[in-house]
Image (cartoon, rainbow, N blue to C red):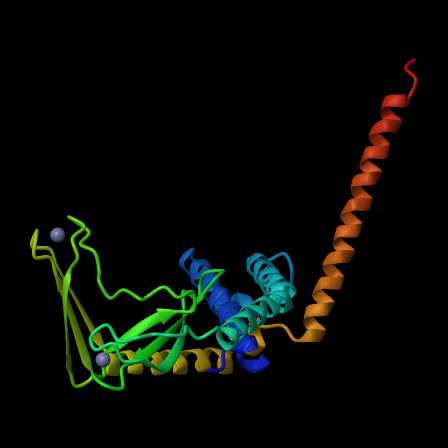
Length: 251
Ligand SMILES: [Zn+2]
Ligand SMILES: [Zn+2]
């Protein structure tokens, strides 16, 4: 399994976030009654558009400033997942709970990937009775049982699969609590395809407007540093004048 993608994947992911943020901001500005489309084209300071232009200018610039470090962080996390996955030790001596046959490892997967210490789950199958068992790299056995949120008894669960639709019903024999979950794999896939199309549309249509090139971004950072220096100089000067005023002898 490959967790680490090529660099462009992370660049696209970051750019989509930047575009969404800028578009959302424009949406809010529009709602406040400004004609953004028109305003965006106006570069002259001193008119209504200047404020929006300036905000977008900072949004784009700051997004560029954080781009490399964020992408590095994402890549490092995926590298860590890859390492954890590749180096996880397969638990040994796993026997079938039903017929005591030595089980065979069929698959492994990453769990709790959003946490700092994700686990690797190994899936074992019995060659004799085909029963399955999940064991984590820590040796801990994966428990299928869910606990009733009302009375903490073990829930009875039933899985039924009809075509691409999986229905999970869990119920509590003790207090009557019931939980139903329907997973429609086909609809999920359609949704994720639609999402992919949406992201590509954003990249194709707005990347050049809201995601700065290296040249533009470096120029922004340089300019901002210059502005910081300037405002520090002004502040220093103000402080000096203040001191001078205090020191002036009174007549
Ligand atoms: Zn067995
Ligand atoms: Zn219960």
